[in-house]
Structure formats: structure tokens, C-alpha cells
Image (cartoon, rainbow, N blue to C red; front, side, top):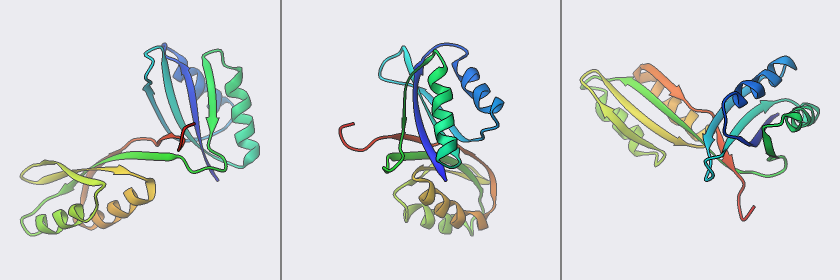
Length: 160
């Protein structure tokens, strides 16, 4: 089972290394990790996706609480947060495939053209993991040159 964990940390050098070292030392795998400054420049929010059962989640949370740079931990067990990823994908482009690629992009509000060159077209997709995967699967037959995917970012729904 995949768990999404939000960790509010002090925005200073070495925090990411300490947290990733904690996971590595205990044999926990991080499926995705995104870090960015928050509304307060003194803090950053890390969104981690970790695979495992409830015991793994409990161990991860306990270990994170021990780190001095960690301010607050929130997991989304039992709730569905607002979660998004970003994918940039460069597709091989020919005159014959351009209309078909544009049709795929135009059918999904999550996708937009970021750049068009002579031999490639770059598409930006922002959305939920399953929607991104659906669009990517439709674009794959055209020939993916390269892609880059962010980790998941998430916030709770409502007034939390």
C-alpha cells in the first residue's frame, strides 16, 4: 500500500540528506519525493510516497519525529488528499503524427503543449497519477524521446 506523508521541516542545508539517510538506513524505499519552500521561507514541505503496510508507516513516522529539523508530520491515511504530479514528455514528431498527438493533448485538460520543434514536441501534463499514466500510455506509440516526472505533492482537502 502506498502512503503519502507530508513533512514540514526547517528550510536549511542538510535536512533532505538526514531524512533520506534515515529511510536508507532502515531499508525503507521512497517511491517519490518532492520538496519545496512553503508560504514561510523558514520552512519547506516534503511530500514522500512510501510503500508498505501500517507498521512501515508507523516506523517511518516515529523515526521522522526523532529528527530535530522536523516540525510537523501529516499522513493521509483514511483520506484522499489533493495530490498532483508534473510530467514533461518529449515525443518524436513527424508531419503525419502531429495531428494525432495534438488530438490526444486536446482531449485532456491536464495536458498542454510546452514546446514544438522540427523533430519533437514537448508536452506538459499536470494531474493525478492515474490520469498522467493514461495520457502517457496514449502518447507512447508515437515514440517517447525523453521524459521527466516530478514526485507527488499533496495537501489535505477542506479547511485542515
